[in-house]
Amino acid sequence: MRDLGRRRFLHIAAALAPVGLIARPAQPTTVARRAIDLEAFLGLSRRLTGRRALDRDVARIYLSALAAEPANAELLRQLARGKPANATRSKALDDLEQGIVAAWYTGIHRVNGTNQLATHSGALMWDALSRPAPGVCAGATGAWSRPRTHSR
Image (cartoon, rainbow, N blue to C red; front, top):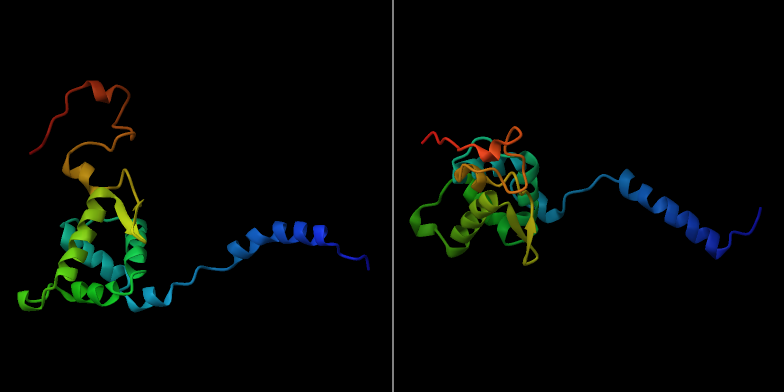
């Protein structure tokens, strides 16, 4: 058998590295397992936003970011169970609730203190403003040139 040189070994390792990433399914973090599940988060989000049709993939992104913060696990469980009485409300609970609503309406969430875009065109603010998201097709060719009619 031929001697496997360092250069040859590195070429083989580099070629096979992506295979290891694809073949291994992503495992939820321990913190994520202790937080609420996706269905409970969607129920909470529907209650907070007043919207029934919420994107499951975007919800998964928001939940993952929230569950990555250890302090959020219990707060998420409390919110999912229903709004606690005013006597047990905390600033942290209120902030989390407002953060969830803000994420759905703006499409932006925080990861390690940095804003991250989860969705642009799927942000609820565009529907609330009765406008298509900038950069998104608003309809048939020339639709932008015709007056919009509002059904309010």
